[in-house]
Length: 297
Image (cartoon, rainbow, N blue to C red):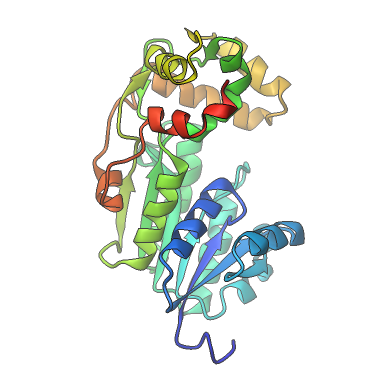
């Protein structure tokens, strides 16, 4: 540690190369906090170089969440941690390794854990994976904050080809939920990491509006000026589609479970937590699609 960083607060972002990680770093950078150092933890040198090119002021560090010993150096001198578990089947093991390293470091004042809305019910695979990490963190002795999120507006980039051809194919039946914007999540995480009053709390964050498949298709149609019909595939069709595009089997089945939660209106809620964390209105689906119109026409 050099003398220029000795009096600064160091925030370690684990999972920094993903969309949520870069959105968080972007928001932290926009705050231009002279007393804060952002350290981005990634798996590869390529990721580290790409992030450093995008955000020249950050530090980068290579870690492997499968190998607990690689986390020791990454945690050195760190004050706060934001962990975004990756899309891996052993999320629980990764979370435990990071939390153990944070405890061992002895300097961590706050550990913010990225999770999912409904984790506390442990009703589906994704919820159980993230809740296992939450529970381990809660009994670690660290000050914790759970940032629980829901399905992203940004995920619709994956449906762009169908939308361009006039169809939104999402297996929601008549269900509704409130899709969430990733840039908003990054700003919420940055606010949690740079303000007080978040210790030992869980925030359940949804988007600002309940939408069904027909509502979403209408947004895409109105913004693009093209016809977009809503089609709700069967579970079998959705599973086949996910597997054919290279999704791992465990994750594909997890998505089927998640879509059933949405289709049966178990997630038909709009939480006030996100707007409170942002201090401003949240991004609507129409705003998101308008800002990214070229991807859908």
